[in-house]
Amino acid sequence: MGGGSSPCASCKLLRRRCAKDCIFAPYFPPDDPHKFAIVHKVFGASNVSKMLQELPVHQRGDAVNSLVYEANARMRDPVYGCVGAISYLQNQVSQLQMQLAVAQAEILCIQMQQEQSPAAMVGLPPPPQDEKSSLLLATNNFNNLQQCFGFASTSSNVMQDPLKRESLWT
Amino acid sequence: MNSSRCAACKHLRRRCPSDCIFSPYFPANNPRRFAYVHKIYGASNVGKILQDLPVSRRAEAADSLYYEAYCRIKDPVYGCVGLITILHQQIYDAQCQLARIQAEIAALSSQSQSEVQQYRQDENVGPSFLPDQNGVPNSTSYYDISTWFD
Image (cartoon, rainbow over all chains, first blue to last red; front, side):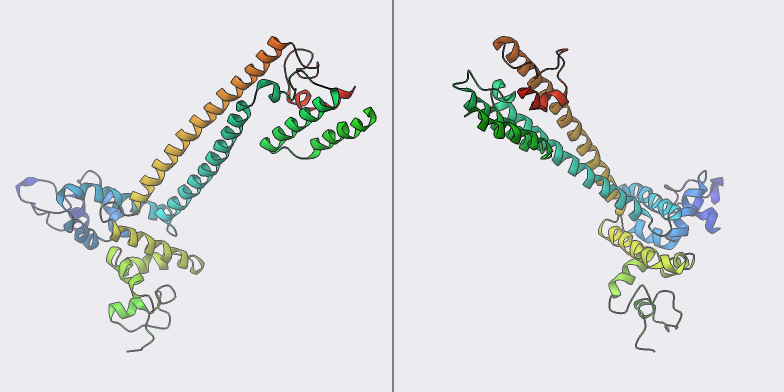
């Protein structure tokens, strides 16, 4: 601690002389003692020192930040640490992928529907030849729409009535 | 030395007591598991973490410590935080894509509705059941064809 400069947070906590080339000093300033305390509690100063020494200087800052993040997560959740967050995020990704698949299927359905003529979309034929054939055509188109949107078959019960009634016209 | 030492005691070259805190979670047949955890956290810190937890939670804690140690050894700069960053990005990208597709669905739906209405206006077709009597289609009357036969 020669020259009057304040020891870094790690050397303060470890109660040792803070050398000029202290590996911790650039990343654990004395004004934030909690940062080193938490990293030391989870990983240990010796392990952190070894990890930093194995990295090039320009990557040590990021490494310290990620170690602090992990240490904080472990303190908040001693059982799962960061793994809890990873599990939660993976679940979110899965849910979003499902929603995307549904939305993409819906868009395909709409595009298929739009490829048909507006007349077919409303279940009506072009000028009918006779009443029976126009009724059958409208029924088929309506059934196609139902299948496209996956409507329950309860409404198809309504569809069966006109087919039955058709026989009354013969 | 007892030949049935756990992986931790084997690694630390010590006797494995009957109440060894590591032995349920670091079996002898998986020496890498303890080696990774010891390299990143140190045996002493792992022991303290496990001791501070109820017995029922220690297995999960040992698994998560191993997972994090594994990630840190594979990526010494970011560890499992790198994975968290990637997942956040994936969530953001998926949300943007979903928003785009939902906007497209809304646009296509309103376009198809206006085409249908335009067709009805141009051709003056359709029994009165298609839109309701106020000219505003609603889903009930649109799909209820029983009124065809009133």
